[in-house]
Length: 103
Image (cartoon, rainbow, N blue to C red):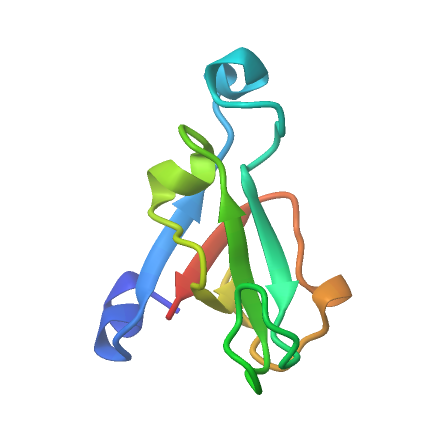
């Protein structure tokens, strides 16, 4: 989905990429990587509202690629790299480079 398509659906396109500075974990906490967690919306609470389905952004580390891209806790992941993941399991979502359409 293009950025225009995301906006037309009332969503945001967030492009996450690691850069050379992201190797220095001292700058932004201890996590490394993209700096966010994804949780399955199974009605069990956490980042997702009870009864929600899909994948939701949990914690977002300060100064991480996820924060710079605009991810916020509770965001619902609609697409990953142009592929709709609204009905995918948690295990199916998670490539090495993320271009997320968020709702």
